[in-house]
Length: 158
Image (cartoon, rainbow, N blue to C red; front, top):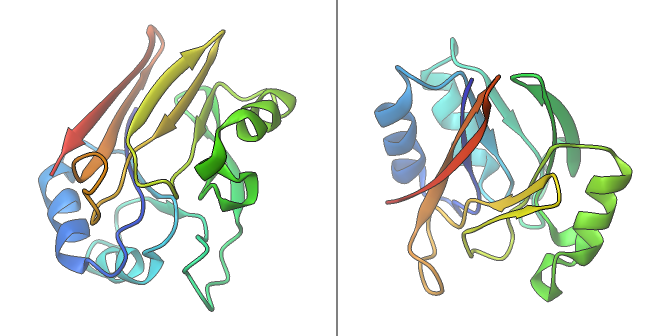
């Protein structure tokens, strides 16, 4: 299963559309981790046949999306959140603890604008970085390949 994960697009319709345009023939699902849901929803209107899932970020005022969700992707349990509820800008300990309590295999978060892939004793803890802000790490998104053989997370720079 091919999953494209993005976060923190902060109004950049063009970049979200570019990601979807370049992956639409291979991706099974698109996930947005918040702070840019308006453009994510606008791009979804262009591709209603594609599977889009999102959570609300701290800058998605007025959105009716939940702040966290659990999904099953390719047989793996996945927790998605923007990250502000877990104070990830100050470290991922709270988020990791919550992911372990929820017994997920993959925990995805945004908010920090810093791409990060960690594998910690059976748990993937992944931030795709920011679609728009490349001050700390380059602008990026995540290609997540989930198969019976395992999980392959690849950060792609924009």
